[in-house]
Image (cartoon, rainbow, N blue to C red; front, top):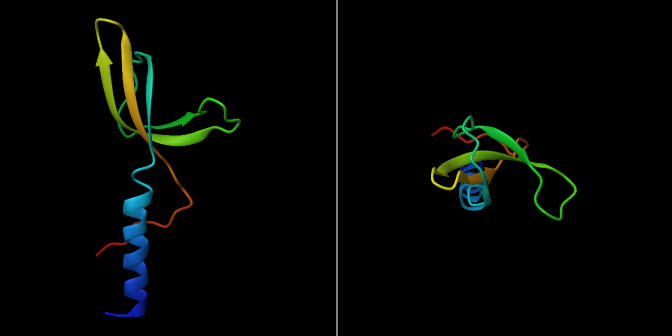
Length: 84
């Protein structure tokens, strides 16, 4: 065990606790070709800049023709996950 290992582990724990909980839920018209783990671009209401998200789950209501999409923010600049 070293200081470098401790730093890597701390960065990994911060990644797990902060980034994976950065989610948004969207209610929209059912889009049949969407799939889980697809990267999409979404502009939140009141914002000027689009952000990238990964689709986490999709729930389609067949009776009303709507779907609920839960997405988590995609951060390409964050370091890769450490292999242990």
